[in-house]
Amino acid sequence: MARIVFAICLVLTALIQATVLPALDLIEVLPDVTLVMLLVWSALRGTAEGLIWAFGLGMFIDLLSLDPLGTNALALLPVVLMGGIARRRLFHNTLILPLVLAVAATMVHAMVLLLLRSSEGAGFPLSSVTRFVVLQSLLNSLFVPPCYVIARWMDRRMVSTRA
Image (cartoon, rainbow, N blue to C red):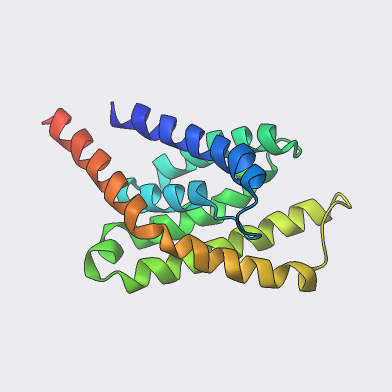
């Protein structure tokens, strides 16, 4: 049941990010909450499950953004790997390390996405997007604590239903 709720959260978050937030035009740099949710989930549940979610989420984001299929799925792979390396130990020690991990994962995701898009001739120069990537990574780090609380609650629900 928790995986279904997580899937619904991912789909709704991706839809809100792609449609509602750009239309509101509140701030120029938008957060990538789906990236943070995927990072936290792969840190809680492991790399294998995170890779499955990255593939599905990446394909869904490709459909929403009209990117070539697989572009966002490939860009989300380093995020899952970083979350998998962290696993549970990182999130139990302190809150500073997950925030730093979210900043690093956002930057790696943006660089991979930029490389994939530039190979098709649709990318931007690195110097023009660096400021936005740094700001987005800092904004994403604000979403780590609430996403962790939600993901941890769902993870506990999964464990309690198996017992």
